[in-house]
View 1 (cartoon, one colour):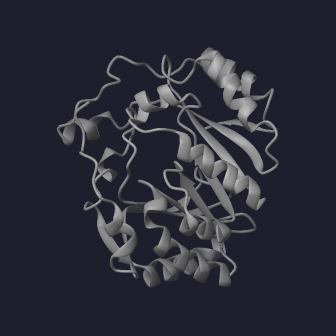
View 2 (cartoon, one colour):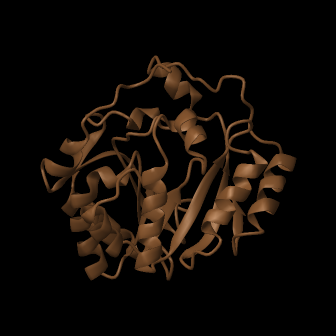
Length: 259
């Protein structure tokens, strides 16, 4: 696969403590957490998901910097629209690569009564991540595949950290949603959908699983970056394939939602 080489992500966490390197910001988002959200997409990711619709977030030196104070001010200006459920979501890229800065940001926002949410692939599990999760009201955990071999094929890395992060969150006793991209021939195998359900069926913190049907909306970005798109020829799942996955997950999760 032709893609960005792996880079040292430490600059995202350790350098310039009041500056967050971001890809973009979305206001009034409704698909990344409960209610109306202020969504910050951070820069940098160590996964190389074949279907990534934002491959321009791979580069840890890409994007732009924004002051944490500026984010706080913008979130507070939008607070009247949040209602009882809304708040801030930090997505990516991978938010855990920015964990120290997000601890600072989430602490400040929680002091203001803002609901905090992380959308993460679970790449890291350490004390800093554990502290960040304490200030995170909702963790949306992207599980790319329950089988480690298939996870490697899809992302180039292991799923061990992702599953360890799920266990850490369960021990904290705080809410978690599972997100799962359904890719025909890659992540729709019936036996592995059951295996994923079995892994999470006794979790008290998992409120629901969200199925995200594979799409091709980011293919043009791969082309613009001069990268080879390795899922060429793979089509989005049919309604029947989505329904099959939904029915399997319904055996294990309290709520199954299709995005």
